[in-house]
Amino acid sequence: MMDKPLNNRAWFFLIPVLVFVLFSSLIPLMTVVNYSVQDTMGQNNFFYNGIAWFQNLLDPSTDIGGRFASALVRNLIFSFVVLAIELPLGVAAAICIPRHGWRVGATLVLIALPLLIPYTVVGTIWQIFARADIGLLGYVLNHLGIPYNDTQDPTSAWATIVVMDVWHWTGMVALLAYAGLKSIPDAFYQAARIDGAGRWSVFRNIELPKLQKVLVIAVLLRFMGSFMIYTEPSVVTGGGPGESTSFLSLDLVKIALGQVDLGNAAAMSLVYNLITLTICWVFFTVMTQIDRRKDV
Image (cartoon, rainbow, N blue to C red; front, top):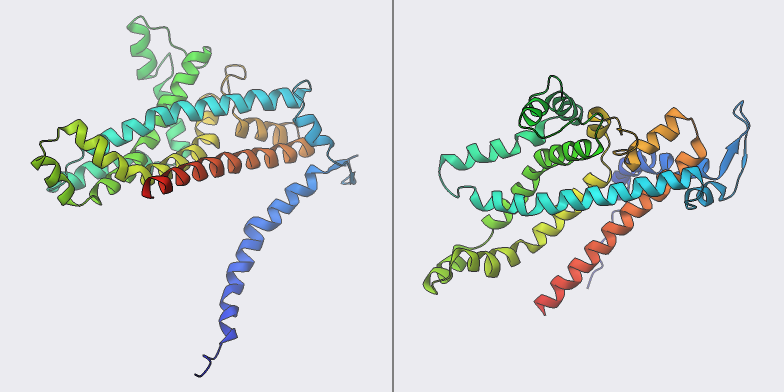
């Protein structure tokens, strides 16, 4: 039996990829790591500072630690709220999308429209739409007797950010769920009709189990998107009123660029990234383990 010759020249095709990863990920990451363990006396003179920035960050009694803890809680609450709304709403929208005919394309385009709008445009639209003086939303709510002012009332600001995110991203969940529903063979529905299963029974016993893997992807994507949200609240509320909508990403930019506190900003960005990766890894591991047990 002859050995198959190896062509090691194929490894040269990986060089562009390695160069791209080096410049786009590794060098910026190592720069942040470098800043997170250094302090400066000005004039671009840096000295080794150990893990002092991380100790400050993880101590809630310090100013930076208190801000980080408060922003982290706001991020977790925001992600939980938007996931709790967008997932069932997206699945419900996917179920309502027609399966055949010209209405399929028209419905999918309408659902995908908010996804095609840039983040800054979305923020500007809602910043104008929600204004209590000239915005349609603020004008209507106040004339209905519902006190609303997203620039002065934290509850109004939170409601505006949540509704804006739901409007922007529920379409993505709906499109993913629709793709999952289209992959279910018609034989499943025919068998359900023969057994006399109702709509709820079909959803619970056929559609929802088949959508599980798609929904895991949707949850991961939306969690990462909502946990790293920056542009929209920055444009709509600027993190206010007060610090009520100042999420981790906004606070990070304020520390890095507003206060030029590079050490604390670098430590905060690393911990922020580590928390995001850890939560995603735990969720993905748990969901895949549950899925494997069902398949056994």
